[in-house]
Amino acid sequence: MFGIPLLIIVFSVILGLYFPIFGKGLSPIVPFLQGILIFLSTIKVDFNIYKKYKELLKPFFLGFFTCYLFIPLLFFFVGLFLIKINLINFPLFVGIIITSSVPLAAGSTLIWSKELGGKVEITLLLIVTTILGSPLITPTYIYLFLRDEINVNVQKMFLEMALIIFIPVLISILAKKKFTKNLNSNISFLVMGIIIYIAVSKSVERLDLVRDYLIISILLSIIFIIIILSMVSILSKAFRLKDEEKESIFIPSFFKNISLAIIVVSFFEPEVVFFPVVYYIMEQLVSPVYYEIRKLKLNQ
Image (cartoon, rainbow, N blue to C red; front, side):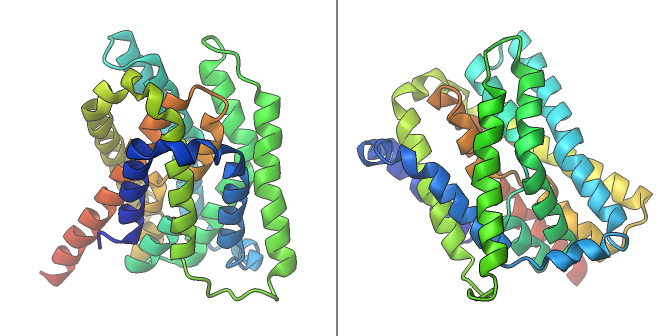
């Protein structure tokens, strides 16, 4: 289960580190590539799922709460504590804030929801809603958490994110009948790999500011994921969710949208991309481990 997404991300990072010259010139196409990702995600979505929201309300609420309230607050307070005791520096802190405030990833979340026997309608509803809400929610969190430290052009961030998200969504709705819904999901991962390559290429000259924090970034990512999964597990029992409802949001709950994080990084110094990329790699490593553990338990 350590599949194509992980291979693409590792390959993209290596290319960005050792062959950055090509990626630097490709920066202007990142919003276009993100638009392609949004299009590929929403072309498969039947927006009639919103008519079923009453049936999906409890798991949806838990997933949305986790994505846009629990995770941002958890990352902010932990990051703030670590920077005050000098365990991390400011660029890493900004990367943590950006990672926490972006919506859920689209491709990986659906794949894991299906593999784990989750109810895909719940996952789709959660993905689409968090993405559509991100132009307002993401800049708001960044402003609230970072306004005393740096000047953030929140209005420009909102406008760019809105254009990048809503135009592809509109096109996907209009073009749904002309395009197959069975598009290969690996296309999305390939586009995402290009985005990551460009981001790493841009930041490689300044990575010396954050590369000493690799180990703590890895440990921090794993700790964050464990806390998130523990919280989701406890609340799933409290909400009396069915197994398929729980699995619809369990792995997706911590999967953050790396490509949108990279769009937000463009408003800051390039080395800020370090933590989002490390966190994404940990996402791709933790998920198959959980899958194998769950499979062993079911076979016992």
